[in-house]
Length: 381
Image 1 (cartoon, helix red, strand yellow):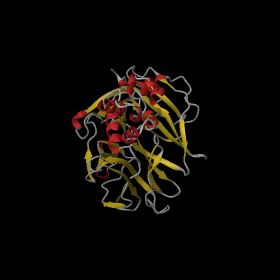
Image 2 (cartoon, rainbow, N blue to C red; image 1 turned 45 degrees about the vertical axis):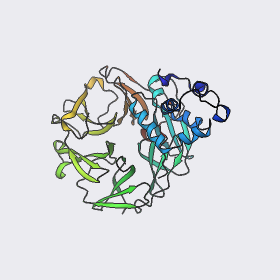
Image 3 (cartoon, one colour; image 1 turned 90 degrees about the horizontal axis):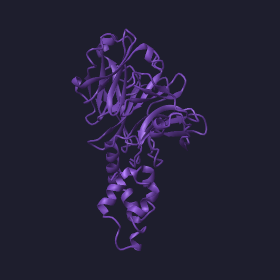
Image 4 (cartoon, rainbow, N blue to C red; image 1 turned 60 degrees about the vertical axis):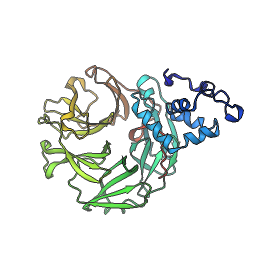
């Protein structure tokens, strides 16, 4: 039996005969089976099912249940739990949320996003385990937000002083699984090091001697690390470009080599994370797009070429990197944001680039687009 096929509006009658144990001496199903069913339900259904009975409310509100539910949803290859979020900077401030599954299955159908209002103007830094890391532009601090439960953490102390003395050069957000901590890292101009805020500790720590200057602001989180493309030893040649890796548990740096056969890279490569794997895009001297994926993090030999796109095939791919891949499906269809025209698109790698569609949305996707996985994880730490 595939529990995902259960019609959620009939779950009450299929799982628990009466609504509460006060009305029945025996549940219809064993508690162990009920638990396994609940772990496989969408977050939105679970939030409603907290009202079924006291025992369900206690179970679904338990942090350990939230972790187990997140693990189950992560192990599933389907995109049911994935959503595209963005921030609307005009008042009233809003966070918009689109179902990734709907974007893939109905690309020609207008899609109305879910939204909820925010009191302040934020930048979405990144997402991890269903939590968004938000940067408050006016108060210059960060906080966590779970768009599914709509809960927020307290604000951090001030990140930096007002510009020009507090210009942020690099940043990143991720999860230290060993210590069960979420961390925000920021590098500031004219400071020899980086500052790290650990959510729940309400203070900043400083790590000296940031090893080099990454080429792009946002570090990509994967496997407990933040990653940037950077110049090796300060050399500006593309051939000397490496991946600067920061371990969030040990708070130490390291370097990863790019695929060795990128000698004809014409422009600065671009680093992304797709399906929990580091991916790098090269534009070769023959104006071909080449995409590699590191199948096993930290193992240089695991770099695998995913696709090569000829010039006549990549009409949506611009030389100035206005296209950003956000999500890739099992059949190699990629969800893209075309920053040039501010549209959401689907690009089929498996067809050799012969298929490119724009899903229609009733509003512009907004700023700071990222994919997040719905979860019950609490941001109050």
